[in-house]
Length: 148
Image (cartoon, rainbow, N blue to C red; front, top):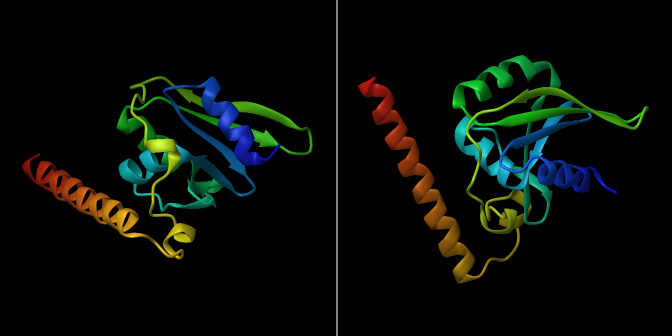
């Protein structure tokens, strides 16, 4: 089993929650969780494998990102994977808003590896549409913050 498969199992076990687990020196989330964390915290998307996004933050920034996640109000759980003991333990579990929306098959179409492939006109159209939507969301958030 791979780290990615382990995260997918943890995600199934914790449906509706953002799931992160340490992978070396980073806490990592994949798929829909990665895309959500990119949108709400601005974490940079990259590829776990073609068509499956991941995001992460350094383990020494756990307190910072835990605080930011709590402020979002979303439910999340953070695991520690000890490869020597081959054990998984919960570090932090926070109940909040359950995620009930999904990105189609965990694909974001903006992964670095995906961008380097020759894209057809349909994929290009989706990429452009999503970039416009993200820009509109950022502008809307800026307006809301200015009004506060």
